[in-house]
Image (cartoon, rainbow, N blue to C red):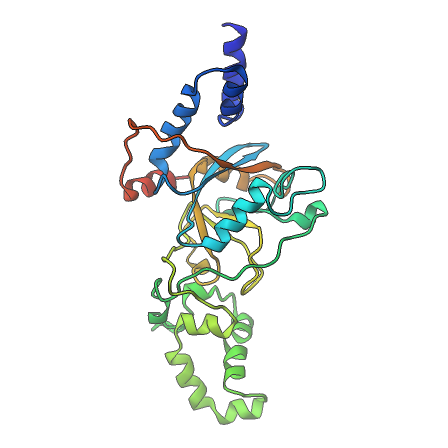
Length: 304
C-alpha cells in the first residue's frame, strides 16, 4: 500500500470530514466528500437542514438540526459551533475542549457545560415547545388510575406537593393550611380537571403554538436546561424515548449517524470523553443520492 493511500485511510478512519480539508490541500478531487454526502444524505429528514458534527475522543456523531421547530435554539448552537458567538480564550470555539459531563448508561448523554472548563455560558433562551401541538392540553395530570401523567416526571409524594400542589395553591391565592382545608373541594376539582399543559404553565413554562411539534424520542437532541426559559448551550442526546421531557425540553435535532457510538459514550465515566469540537458540516448534494421516506429514516437511524 502506498504512503498516500495509508494517510488517506488513516484520516478517513479517524474523521471522515477531515477528507474535505485534506483533499483541498492536496488539490485532489471531491470524490471522498461526495462519498460522505452519499452516506449522510439518506439519513436526513430534510437535506436542506443544517448538519453538525460532534468530534470526540471516542469518535464522531452527526446531528441534523431542525430550524423550523426551534429557530432560536438552532441559531444559537450554530453560532457557538462556528465561532461567531463566545469563542473561548484559547482561540477555539465555544464547545472546543469540553466533555460529556453527564451520562446515564443507555439513556442519555450531555455536553456543553462551559463553566466546567472555567468559561462563561451564553445568555438564556426561551423554550421552543408547542404544547397544544403535542396534545398536552388534552391529557390530564391525574390519570384514571390516580397516578400522575408520565410527562410530569413526579418522583414521589414530596415532589407532587412541590411541583403540583404548591403552584396550584399559589394560583388559587391559598397561603395557609387553614385556607387549604377550607377549600378542599375546590382544590380537588381543579386537580381533577387540570391538564398537563396547565400544570407546566403553573411552573413557569411558556409555549409557542406557531412551531411544529417534536417529541423527545430515541435519537433526539434537546436543549438541556435547569427550568423554564433557561436554555443556553447544553445539548442532551436522548438514547431512548423520553416522554417525561416532552413539555420541558426543546427538541432541536436528531442523531443521523453515530447512535451506537453515543450509547457507548453514555457508558463511559462522566467527563472522561472529550469533545474536540462541534462544527457545521457542508453537505454536497448529488443527483444520484436516493432519499428514503421520513419514516424509513427515523426507523433506521435511531437504533442503538
